[in-house]
Image 1 (cartoon, rainbow, N blue to C red):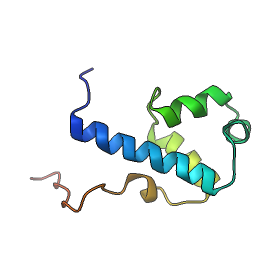
Image 2 (tube, helix red, strand yellow):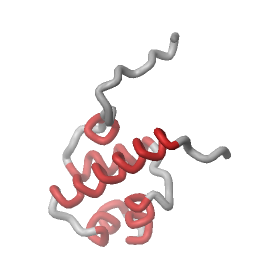
Image 3 (spheres, one colour):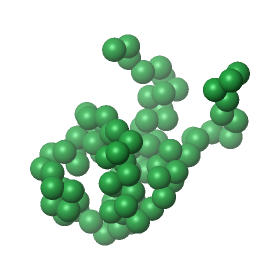
Image 4 (spheres, rainbow, N blue to C red):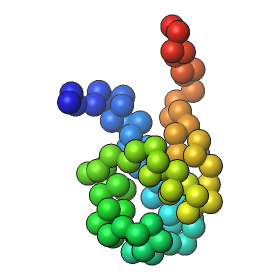
Length: 87
Protein backbone atom coordinates (compact mmCIF):
# COMPACT_ATOMS: atom_id res chain seq x y z
CA UNK A 1 0.00 0.00 0.00
CA UNK A 2 1.41 3.39 -0.96
CA UNK A 3 1.65 6.19 1.61
CA UNK A 4 -0.91 8.98 1.52
CA UNK A 5 -0.05 12.16 -0.32
CA UNK A 6 0.36 15.31 1.70
CA UNK A 7 -3.10 16.54 0.64
CA UNK A 8 -4.69 13.22 1.54
CA UNK A 9 -2.91 13.24 4.88
CA UNK A 10 -4.13 16.77 5.61
CA UNK A 11 -7.68 15.81 4.67
CA UNK A 12 -7.54 12.68 6.83
CA UNK A 13 -6.25 14.69 9.78
CA UNK A 14 -9.20 17.07 9.34
CA UNK A 15 -11.52 14.04 9.27
CA UNK A 16 -9.99 12.75 12.52
CA UNK A 17 -10.53 16.14 14.16
CA UNK A 18 -14.19 16.08 13.11
CA UNK A 19 -14.54 12.52 14.44
CA UNK A 20 -13.16 13.51 17.86
CA UNK A 21 -15.19 16.73 17.93
CA UNK A 22 -18.41 14.82 17.21
CA UNK A 23 -17.73 12.50 20.15
CA UNK A 24 -17.01 15.43 22.45
CA UNK A 25 -20.14 17.26 21.27
CA UNK A 26 -22.17 14.09 21.98
CA UNK A 27 -20.76 14.19 25.52
CA UNK A 28 -19.26 10.72 25.32
CA UNK A 29 -15.93 9.32 26.42
CA UNK A 30 -13.99 6.85 24.34
CA UNK A 31 -14.89 4.15 26.86
CA UNK A 32 -18.62 4.94 26.55
CA UNK A 33 -18.45 4.85 22.76
CA UNK A 34 -16.57 1.56 22.83
CA UNK A 35 -19.15 0.01 25.14
CA UNK A 36 -22.04 1.13 22.92
CA UNK A 37 -20.28 -0.24 19.82
CA UNK A 38 -19.28 -3.48 21.54
CA UNK A 39 -15.61 -2.76 20.90
CA UNK A 40 -12.59 -2.20 23.15
CA UNK A 41 -11.72 1.38 24.09
CA UNK A 42 -8.48 0.99 22.16
CA UNK A 43 -10.54 0.65 18.93
CA UNK A 44 -11.98 4.14 19.43
CA UNK A 45 -8.60 5.55 20.40
CA UNK A 46 -6.88 4.07 17.36
CA UNK A 47 -9.62 5.32 15.04
CA UNK A 48 -9.39 8.85 16.45
CA UNK A 49 -5.59 8.94 16.35
CA UNK A 50 -5.35 7.65 12.79
CA UNK A 51 -3.48 4.53 13.87
CA UNK A 52 -6.42 2.57 12.45
CA UNK A 53 -8.32 3.58 9.30
CA UNK A 54 -12.09 3.97 9.69
CA UNK A 55 -14.14 2.15 7.07
CA UNK A 56 -17.48 3.46 5.82
CA UNK A 57 -19.57 1.00 7.87
CA UNK A 58 -17.74 1.96 11.05
CA UNK A 59 -18.18 5.62 10.17
CA UNK A 60 -21.92 4.99 9.82
CA UNK A 61 -21.92 3.54 13.34
CA UNK A 62 -20.11 6.58 14.73
CA UNK A 63 -22.48 8.86 12.82
CA UNK A 64 -25.56 7.18 14.25
CA UNK A 65 -24.17 7.10 17.78
CA UNK A 66 -23.12 10.77 17.68
CA UNK A 67 -26.38 11.76 15.93
CA UNK A 68 -24.62 13.60 13.12
CA UNK A 69 -24.86 13.13 9.37
CA UNK A 70 -22.28 11.04 7.56
CA UNK A 71 -21.40 13.93 5.29
CA UNK A 72 -20.41 16.07 8.28
CA UNK A 73 -17.34 13.83 8.59
CA UNK A 74 -16.32 13.91 4.94
CA UNK A 75 -17.01 17.44 3.73
CA UNK A 76 -14.21 18.95 1.66
CA UNK A 77 -11.58 20.82 3.64
CA UNK A 78 -11.00 23.48 0.98
CA UNK A 79 -13.17 25.63 -1.24
CA UNK A 80 -11.91 23.81 -4.33
CA UNK A 81 -14.59 21.85 -6.21
CA UNK A 82 -14.22 18.08 -6.23
CA UNK A 83 -13.17 16.37 -9.42
CA UNK A 84 -15.91 14.27 -10.93
CA UNK A 85 -15.33 10.57 -11.54
CA UNK A 86 -15.74 11.14 -15.28
CA UNK A 87 -13.08 13.87 -15.47
